[in-house]
Image (cartoon, rainbow, N blue to C red; front, side, top):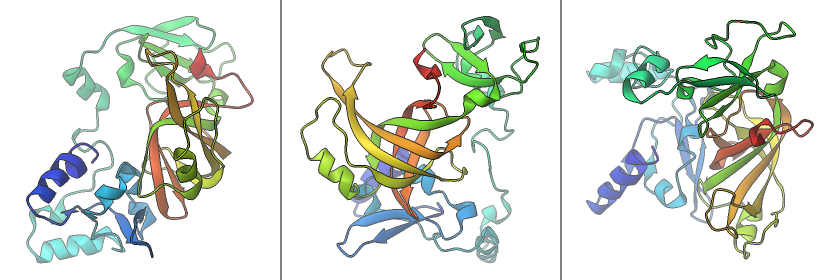
Length: 296
């Protein structure tokens, strides 16, 4: 969506004189009273795909059209497709990664990328076992750890964190999966930024500067429930930059309800009502009442 459909394809389409790129995503584009474009959830939340479209900018939304926005059900779409003789009318829904037909993500990864053996560790740094490639794990995963011996308390272990730089998988108890604050980077706005963000972004970047807070709901997976939250923007030192004085902008979201299984690298999309405000890449996710395991 970000690199092909609404970047390369859209750019080419506009250059050729077309008005828009039309896709079958379940989402809605609304024009406000000032002529600004906004991205909203589809009428049917069960099919809503606004989460994966949170990367679209205001300019891209001017040339995006989603005709299924108000379609009440997939059955209605299938019926019309069948009536028109389209071969996809009986194509089953895809719920996993669409280009992995058998749903075996681990096998697909092993066939297409280099997987390197590494350590499975607990939060104290003890090596509990080996893995065949950290790319095959997801935060919150319980099955397939193959550690071979139980935890001291006898309770199941879960993947808490994946550390690509050291090729380590960190595991621990279920309670350690709970987080209530998320920091996102590389944010984009689906349409124009909200008033609090726009005012802050117009100011000179200063380390530690924070925007006014604004109420949102946060969603960290395509089909997850949105969580009531409070958000603000903040300038912090960029610890990944070669320039020691470089700053980066972070979207800080304080969750009003704890979440589990949130990992750096996931996309966080924030909403106000049905409107998509924007998205960012999760840099850190942690609990405010315990140590941040991602900082180890």
